[in-house]
Structures are given as C-alpha cells and as structure tokens.
Figure (cartoon, rainbow, N blue to C red):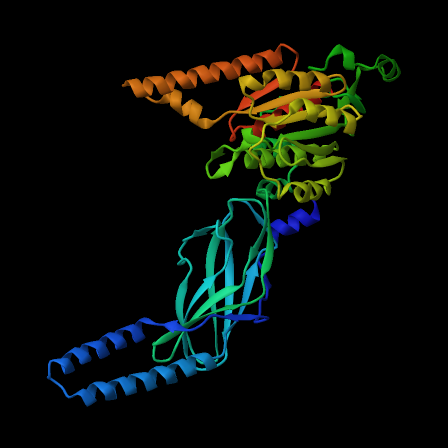
Length: 465
C-alpha cells in the first residue's frame, strides 16, 4: 500500500500537545465537604433551639464556617490550572480500539482533581485494564501525571476533542471548580484499513488468499503474452508455438499472464438499503471496507480503480493506477454516510455511463430487494452496453439465523415463514438478473470481501473484461 496509508496505520500515537492555550472557568460550586459542614451547622442550630447550648456558640460556628469557606474559595480561585497534552493517532480506523494518553503537568501545591477528556460523545470508552473517564487523582506539588484510556469510534468522518475538563477540589474540600483546558483537536476516522496494512508484504495472489478468496490456479492462460518456455505436461495445444517449435526442434509453449491496465469501478450504494447494522457497524461500513480490499488487490495487479457512490451523497473518483490511489480512495470515502433515501439506480447508471467511457468491470454493492428489480435491471442493461457488471447483494445475517431457530409456537412459525418468503423473493430478483447475464453475489457482510476478490480474479483469469 502507499506510504501515506501505511504510515497512518503503523505510526504510533504522536503527542499533539494541547497546552493551556485557553482556560474556560466555571463558577465554583459547593463540594460535598461544604454540604456536610452546612448540615453540621444546621444540627447545631437545632441543639441551640432546644436550649442545650447557648446561641453564641451557633453564631461563632457560623462565623468560623463562613471564614473558612471564604478562605478555601480564595485558595481555589488562585490555584494554578494544570497543563494537559493529549497524544492521539493522526488517523483512526472505525471499530478499532486505540489508546488515548493525557499528560498532566502541575506546577503548584498538592492538588486533588477529577479529569474528564471531552472525546466525541458517541464513541465507546473501552475498559481494558484501565478505568474509564472521569478519573480522580491527586497531583503532588510540581509533578507530572499520565493517564491512559481506550476509545473505539463507531462512525467514520471528522470529529473533535473539545479540550479536557479538570474539576479542581479546594484544599479543605469545601469547593470545586470546573476548568476546560486546551484547544480543540480534530481527528479523522477512516474505514478500517488494518487489513490493507497486513497485505502490504504479500503479493496480490497471497493477499487474495488472506481475504478468503478461493483461487483456481491456471498455468499460462491469461490474455497478455508473458514468455516462451518448454512444453510442460498439462499445457493446452493452443499454447504451443509451432514456429518456435520447428526452430528449436522441441515443443515450445507460449505463457500468458492476466492482462493489466484494465479498469475496475466500485459502485457503492449510500441509500437506505445500507443503513442496517450488524456487529456494531452498518452495512455501508462493511461494504466500504470490502471495497478497499478488492481495490487494493486490483491496484497491486496493475489495474486502475475508481469509486462511484449512489443513493445518498454522491462521490466520484475516476479510475487511477498505482498504490497511491488507495490514499485517494480513503480520503474520498472516509466521511461518507448512508442516508434514508431511495436509490435511483437508473439515474445513477446514466450518469456513470457518461463519466466512464472506457470499458470497465463495474461492481455494484447494494442490498437488493424484489421491489427494486425493475430499476436495477434497467440500470444494469444500460451499463452492459459497454461494461461488464457484477451485483453484490448483501444479505442480513438475521435471515439465516431466523431459519435456523426452532419452530415451537405460532410466533416462531410466522417469523420463520416470513423469513423464508423474503429470502425466496430475493432469490427470484437475483435470478432475474442472472437471466440477463449479470453475475450476482448473494452474500453476508462477512462473506463480501472474499466474494468480491474471488469474482474479480475469476473475471481477470477468464479474459471476460
């Protein structure tokens, strides 16, 4: 993979100091110590009211209480604000746990405080041998403390850490004050590119096996001439070069390799069909991850890869060659989100036909329903005039599980019957496409990467493109 993406994966969390460029102070509030002191003073008032103690004791107690509270408040207001530096990775893959480190530098007297890092609210704080935020600690005079916690983003896009909240406790524990320190930090959450990092040291064929694609080995039957060699048992008669055989007076075969410099165009649905969630991620996220995997393998085999999103927000990346194209695809897709809108397949195919003039392998990743079949069929037939089309239709894993559940009452029988009917309607829609010479992949999210890679390699080896 390209240097930029590889660095984003392998580079450790770099300290991006968020020193006290700003300090937002809230008004001090009573701490539990002040509340208990007030309760004690009120109880003393009750004692005085029944004549068990003179009234001046209650007044002296109030004066002492007020003076101590004022002194404690003054010391809290004059307490220096600790400086905080946060270490974050530059890029964060979705669904992956990473450490966030806070370095707190304190210059002053001993200070007790509570720390809460203002991370994006919808991120999961993971408790893995470390406590979650907020964290309470005591800083010694002129000391440095380091806190580490783990986060797992569940959504791609641009996010911001809005500083760090420090809740300082006064010396006598009567008051506390919230202070937000540090400038906001932006971070980008990308699709999970960890599999691409694992492929970096492998060939395209080895990477394909890592994904789980089943590759049928064929020797010397590509479409581009590679070299001459001696005949081997198993070579077809078509491979024999009779002129070279006559000159060498022994059988000589031509060896071919898969044609390079072809084009792969990934078309990903961003409409309502991709809003379903499985395993904490949406179908769109899974589709995007699989798209990057097959794109990486295609780029490594010398083909050009492009991206077109349809349905919700529309993005277009013209086919590009070279491993640097992975960076382009990541930047173009990391903030895409599916939208609750119906996908106009016919309009999308019309625009795609105008944008992509050269023949390409078009892989459409969507969740096909029987009510979509007329629009999808019209869109596919339009693209088939110039391109080779493959439709990958995501299947909800719950459907398979519903059929495996025991049927022991009316409710479970209705659920199983509804699932079976829905699957039969999907199968009929897929068969309609296959009758028009369209390759259809009916797969779950877990099966999608391997299925796309396997289909891509099969088409390359058969010379259909």
